[in-house]
Length: 430
Image (cartoon, rainbow, N blue to C red; front, top):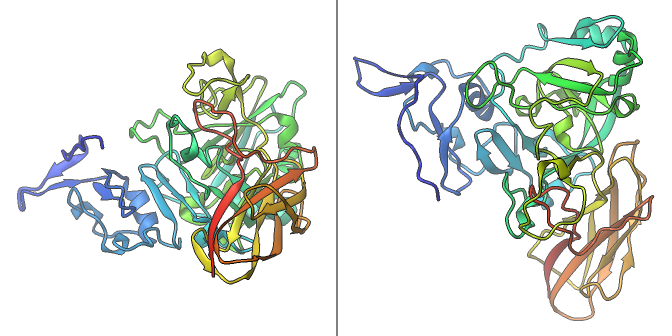
């Protein structure tokens, strides 16, 4: 484990009355994930974690851990998530907690790149549309609701690094296992409708997304993330500028009060705390758009191989994938059990979901539901009978509308993206 610096930073002050070093940005918060790290976290993030403002935040000492974060449920409004990092906050959902057909807000993963904004007031929030448009606009959330059709869609979001922990040699970044995936119901307006109202000029090739969160360094001139997408993708019907999640306001750690929802592509394109969309005549070059960020090599590479930056290409659609959500890994079951889960594949549909209980020798076709709307995942289920007691594994394999099927193993890549290997769940049958 890296050595941890317990010293105060440039924002810390020492009161003459107490002699205790205090921090204006809420000091350090220890992750209760039991990984043992202790890193500096912003006040806005701590407030979001405990679920409300902290009136006496100026009195917080360095190293303070809110008592409300002492248990397993460390994020307010989130239930059972595993905290991977507290600066920025990143937390995933164990697969067995993703069993709902529509992911409830308290089970939706959290993937942040910076520090959430202090102010998240929906009443005063504005969104600017500018760049190569005929009519630049600045809209309130009330304007969006009044001027455009409000729609509700179930849409799948997945972090590009979901599954990174399985790569060998290890890839740098949050060590997501399987839980950086969700399919909640989002309410908002179509990005396409707003861009059409602004007037997309003929030279536009890419969008650029901006938000109100701040860089981890505290430098206001730096953006934590600013990604975009080809204009052709932006003009599809499934992408929403969302202001509600599962019929309520967005969770603060999921981008309240306004965000993009871009199903089927890396969730990094779905900017949270959205306050500006710029239309550009070049591929956007904001933070996390260049270098190796959200990119993979343009050819297969050997594990551990160094790859030149110019040989990386931007990730667009996510690959075909599935998840077993019941029974949980390690569960004890009887001689017969239902197995169920979800399947998805970027901009495509899933045509077949198969499971195996004999380590891939034979496969059983599961019942597969159509998605409730374009951009949602498929729900599936199968009834499994075992001939004798013992240890079994359920393997799940999805095949999409293009004929692509999940592999048992995938090629390594330096950043650990796009891991769509078959999900395996171990069961003890008695």
